[in-house]
Length: 341
Image (cartoon, rainbow, N blue to C red; front, side):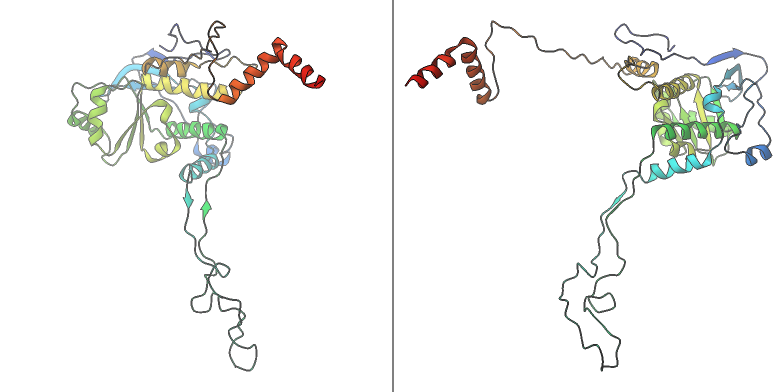
């Protein structure tokens, strides 16, 4: 489906379109995970599944939950990467600290009103020595270590954010928390129909349903009244959504759009510059087709020499008149006359 391209759009040079491989089979596919001892010992470099074997999972019916007679082959570069918990933690901290700014400011010894006069003499009183009446230990003094205005945001590169997303998808697959369904279509926009589908799971599970860019309107309305169900587009998935959900439900079209979006984002890291023909990726074209986004055309205004030039400021008009006089030679004759006089 991603190979359909509008006449007004062109895929950027060097970018490829991919499609999810779906094979029909009477037996659901089973994938074997590596032993936990290996994954724990070499957690920074060991992939959860064997790279030389195909990564196929079954497709289930959305309403009944039964096997639909199809298997989907996943990409190893997205769903089979080492489980780097440190990268996920770093991106999670970046996400929750994003745009977090505190403006609370307390008065310190330097900002509290008062003079530098010594409260009493240094010796002879029997009390502890004091050098300033604005000290934190004195009445109405400033706070020693009060709050300050702070900005908690920090930078994380796009490469790290993209890799953390792939790690989370690989972890969900390794834990058996990903389910592929044929589609999300239901007969009517009723919450009861979606609630019956969720009865086959634990009632405490939280679901993240990822559909294509064009979601079924009946399902989109019906899932709004269920708090433990969250609907997301393929290009709107982030670390927080994947960490909160207990089960990740992907439709076939949603899986295809998600894989294409992640692959385009991966290839963009190596194709940034003037030497690459940067037009549009396949995922961008897909979004433009679904949401009916027209391409932007920049047309320069045409110059007509027969019409007079209109300027916004009078200074520019004076500059133009001066230029025309110098070009015609009137300014030189005037200068000669002034010199002779």
